[in-house]
Length: 225
View 1 (cartoon, helix red, strand yellow):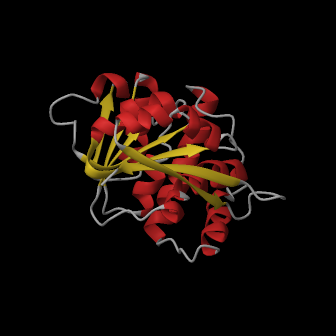
View 2 (cartoon, rainbow, N blue to C red):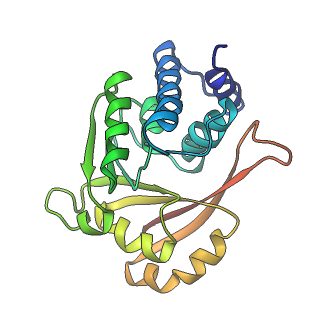
View 3 (cartoon, rainbow, N blue to C red):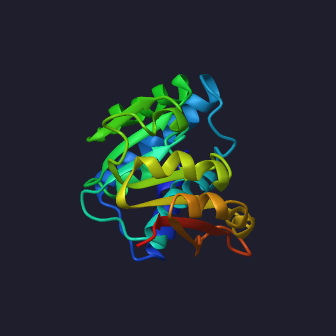
């Protein structure tokens, strides 16, 4: 039976006025197939393996960042603790102009990401094996990115000191968070002040995500002027 992952994703994106090209549709289809295959035979990557789970819970959830903030043309984006490539690779598929760096501490997960990059023919993607907290001050990495992302990685009190050093002076850090976003921000207030970061919460409701619909709370942090 053909996968319904891409049709579900396209229907949801249509609610946001976004249409996929034939190349993008094929890339998302191949990505979904690889995720299911590897999850079943090689590596436990995710508990979401249904068509709707992948389409909404992974792909659309990753792309929701485009509703939370503007990402400039040809921006450099670093995805911290990318795991199976989320949110970095779906963002890159939708926005092929971006220059993407994936950071992941588990070598097997990074090999999966490399397989997706190769088979989906995604260009301008750099993969780095390591932990964000160890890499953030490395020459050639520190202060190099326009945007840093982190999805299901760690609390904000830990994430901020890891993510901010990756950013250019006017760069933005985006963290995917759930209902406890405000509480996390409160706990990280002292850290944000020390790093001169101004943070805010931006909610984004995901189409076709159930009833009631699921809402992602994005925490956006940027250097205070």
